[in-house]
Length: 166
Image (cartoon, rainbow, N blue to C red):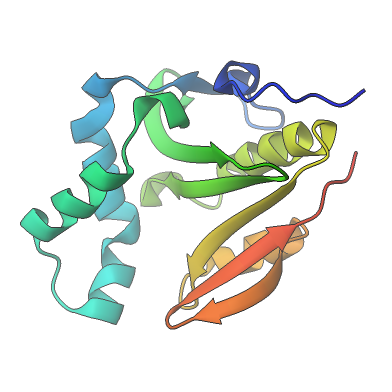
């Protein structure tokens, strides 16, 4: 049975394989935390590729991206540690952003989040795509989870995973 429900509600809940980790729907009140998370998790890559981090410019980019209705907050033991943003296309789920705070990385949280997204996509017979900076070590995680490079666009790589039921 194909699941074409585009609501993020179906992704909310405990994450498999990471004790006390869960996803919840974002709210407008999460804006400041999510910006700070973005600076902590992506700041080094932004600076390496584009020069010094400038809050005013980054707030503009952030505000163009942040839509609570398309965003889930990752929590561990009730503490906000990450975010995943999703947009639905006809045959694809696009991960607009996945960020885990650096002090929580390499603990399986990002893997659990993406496995949840991939499972939902498989039920809907959709691919999952995302962009990643070529210098971001998360590139290896995406490859391990079945993502393959589709195109390179400057410093960014578009990757896609085909639906598969695990």
